[in-house]
Length: 235
Image (cartoon, rainbow, N blue to C red; front, side, top):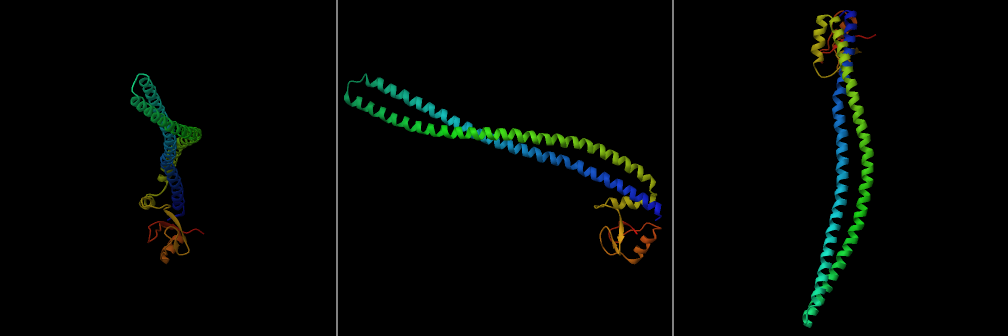
């Protein structure tokens, strides 16, 4: 392989590598955006849980208030009935109902106080979580906008890099280009590597002496007998 052919291959490889790097970065942007969106969703779930806890306690407090009001109405009804009865045993029975209901109200009021305290604490937790959430989401949304802008720029970079590759390809002799394309289809970059001592710079396996000699001469395309990469000698 003539020296000028090697130089053109290395130019093509450099531009190909740049194109691949831009493509990999571009392909990674959606994953990064999805990861940020997952963080937003997780934080929204957390805030909804805090909100549900608070609202649940508020609902429980309202139910207790309804129960207390209902019990108070019962007492009022019993007292009205007391004023109308004439028999002592009926009067005593209503007195017992009033006392029992008053005890029930006392218990309900204790529960109401406990629920009110828990509700206040839950409300404070929700308010704090909501404030933090808004700040975090603002940061996450800013990150998403940055990634979206980066994706636009990377798309331009990929297109420019592809133009550079397309410009370099016709300058490489057809036999060299065929070998380059065949090796480039395999996983792993670069295609053209140096011979380091008696080892391929790509797969790092030992190559036969005649390959080292051919690479040093630089008069023809030389490939590694193990990985197929194009190898060349670098003084």
